[in-house]
Image (cartoon, rainbow, N blue to C red; front, side):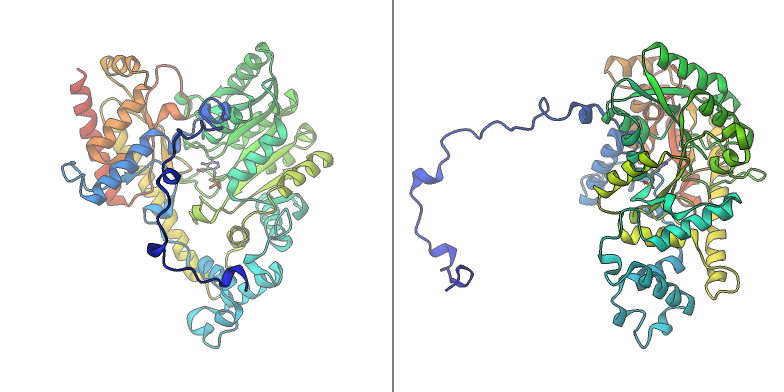
Length: 512
Ligand SMILES: Cc1ncc(COP(=O)(O)O)c(C=O)c1O
């Protein structure tokens, strides 16, 4: 008889074990992994977007759900801390979800079901058939090749070629689990010691500071000029470069975020030319984080890719080595949970590219449903196809709502005495500067806290609005503020602005 088929009597009828066997005489052995023995690089790494203020918000949310928070002056948390559109009500785009569902469903329950055409438009069925064929028999449930499904990479390459007006090849595209995974790969391939430095904008999206501290490399922050709408200037780049050199570091790469997070600025062609020329002159690889390329709200402004500018600079930028990143999490999709995205390698040494391939191989492949969504993002329904009208309406509505909310939020914040705020021309955030009473600053410093962290916690605890302290992104000394998204509904945002104003007045009175 096999062990698996032995029938045991019910546990309650087992003979009692001798007492000595039940009692553990000694304390459990000390853990091998402790705060002292674990990776100290991980301990010191910071990621403000999900930092202490957000953890406190999640705690309050649990209290509200359990009834413990009944005495609080609000009944829900308004999460303005992270660019996660669908978490705050944005609807997915119908065509993309239809095709994804048909890619995921077994053929007999989806594309081959006799009633499929009653539920799905013909172009969604046709696209799903095409994508299923591209993925092969394992579909979304099988690993793909390391760089991602070849057909999907070709879709990305065609998109980039169309966007830039310059041919791109699928072999230079890596599909990734969101832009984050691609950025991690490039930084891992670029820096390996405390002597290596990367130029990073300040303020910046903290994946850069976080990964650099994890990798043990040096962050050379270049200040964006708030007085000039967060401009990137050659003086600031040069100052950061010189400081790093003076500290004995070797700058290897420079990051731009366009449109900017948290700053919302959109880089002009001229500025991009300046950055590219700087990178070429100083032999820096350029990392262009372009995840918000679809999110430009300001009339008259438009996104232009670093790749396009570099190619059009001709001989002056022929030496530029460039990694560009894009994502399904932002734009008009807001599909953060699907973890889709890509990076494109431009003029990267073939040996280095092969090593990045090896690194990607060690993660096997990006999640295949995210790869499928990336293909859809870059190849939406076109005019004449049955789903185009709905797609055009849905994306236009999202675009318009974002533009309205950006205006509403920035105007509302600017009207609060003590606040100043640049335009949120792109991306999904406003990044106001807030004048804090000196006593509040002293009080925070005495507790070893950043003053704007104390401010953000106070805002959260009195209004339920969760923002990220500006110190989490880096900022000029003596500046305080926060980053807030403009993703919640227009009504909610209007209410939030009112509550931020009321809280600010009360906060200033408290520390007068
Ligand atoms: C500037 C920037 N880059 C990269 C990312 C990462 O995006 P994901 O990994 O979801 O593609 C984000 C997310 O907020 C971001 O703001």
